[in-house]
Length: 115
Image (tube, helix red, strand yellow):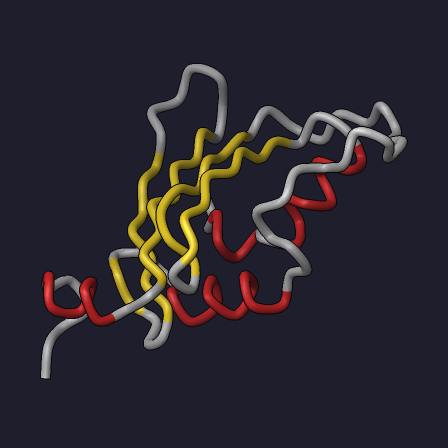
């Protein structure tokens, strides 16, 4: 049996994500590696993070341009998720700059972890 941080585990999992979170504009980023199926990596709560991604509808899709969002800034945090989700390459950015972006952030709060 392999541990969560071995190359064998990464090769066997079809989800391998790198999550980078900036808690403030001048802050050093926090970085996590997340595997799912089974949950692992160096993410502090891999089970919760994988569950949040599974629950979210289109977790890597941007807000469609035709959607109207309230200009409601919720904080300086931003994040980036890159890698492979269930075998599909993904790259997505997140922020809290308006109501739609904040909703996307909140849906994946367990992925971004606590500062």
